[in-house]
Amino acid sequence: MAPKSVQSIPEMPAGDPKHAARATRTAGRQMRSRLLDGASRLFKERGLAGTSISDIAAGADAFPSQITYYFRTKEALFVEAACRDMLYVARAAEQAALKAHTPRDYTRALVESVTATDSVAFFAEALTLTRRRQDLAPLVERTVGRLHGEGLRAYAGQIERHGWNTLRDPDATSRRFWAVAIGVMVEGHAMGRSPEELCSEMLRVLGEQATTKPAGDGARLRVVGDRNASASDSPDRETSS
Amino acid sequence: MAPKSVQSIPEMPAGDPKHAARATRTAGRQMRSRLLDGASRLFKERGLAGTSISDIAAGADAFPSQITYYFRTKEALFVEAACRDMLYVARAAEQAALKAHTPRDYTRALVESVTATDSVAFFAEALTLTRRRQDLAPLVERTVGRLHGEGLRAYAGQIERHGWNTLRDPDATSRRFWAVAIGVMVEGHAMGRSPEELCSEMLRVLGEQATTKPAGDGARLRVVGDRNASASDSPDRETSS
Image (cartoon, rainbow over all chains, first blue to last red; front, side, top):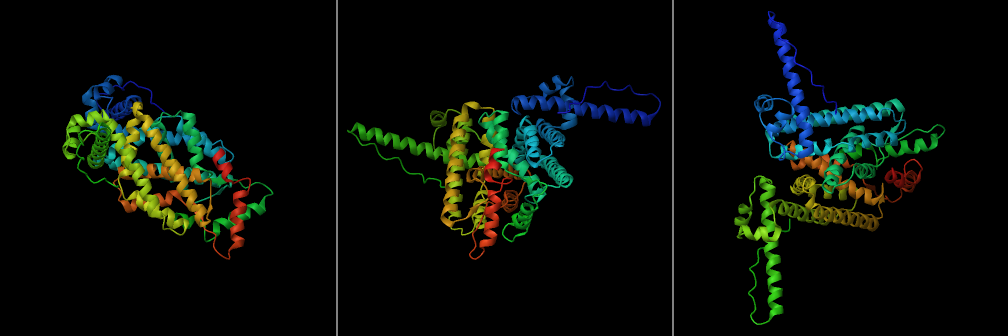
């Protein structure tokens, strides 16, 4: 997902210390990014245990010491690469879903995009690792916060733009999307399921998120509205339990 | 969950080969079960990497060779222990939820029971492992099949017994329950969440499963019924997408 092209490190301009510091920072960021790209690729292919620091260094044309300089441990690099990958996938899914004109097409576009990659399984592996490496929890915490925040913003934006009726609290809808994605993917990958099978299972488990407001169907629309406002089934009751 | 008490192996009766064979089978089953109990406890506490075959053998008063005899590898024992644990937890959750008289109490009882243990996280770790160890996939496949089958049967039974209105296809409801459980638990454990936090996040993400049929509220009831039967929001459409 969005692998940065490997750029040559700009030459240090002699004489101006401010320029030199900026060039060093840029070079450092580029090397960091290159290591993350290469690490993502190898980790997704071979897993944490099957990938060594020297494999990653060799793949990114770097020294092993550069990896420990930037990331300290292989586990920290694993978690950072997985978190970055997950945010890329979430953004790519939202981009792919922008063209959708109905709630069903929107959900389908998101699910197709997400199930076509290994990134959710990679992220779930990083979450499992972090459970026993709580020193890495802050990065996971920030990533999950962004995932939910950006998911909520994107979904609320679509609802607003198209005038859809969301069937429940948009925040709970977005959180459910990612919880279901992780659950279905962890289970399905263990059983060797194909991306197509993962996609249809995820759609089935997710169910409907929102309904359209079809023209001239005001009566049905009010029924949906009444239902959302009824004491036994309001979005508030759903989320307060 | 339901750890079998360690029973002494019955003495071999001399003379009758059929009795002797039965006694040997019983002793074998007991040893297997004792090893699984001990392995579950250690794996949940220390994870796969932090537990050795000799730790498990020592904890179960057995020889390491008995572990390789019954389970072949540490990974196979890990996956079998996690699968067995998950089915125990699912059954205990259904037992705990039997007393519930409303759909909300039912869901809450299930969620409280499931989030109070480490078993879902243990199972998720086994699923992650199995992704790269497809020789272990058949056991996972059987476990997931039983989990979904028993979950569907229990949920459909409650719906029938109490006359609740399920908001969607019971099979999708049961599959969603476990997908959300895995997703929320994997994420929450990585961030060091408490059982209470996991419980309220899971309830929030799950939302409402079913509604009661309150006495004297026939009008509202029909609205819910109409909604389920409407073209834009039927359980069939939800699951066929």
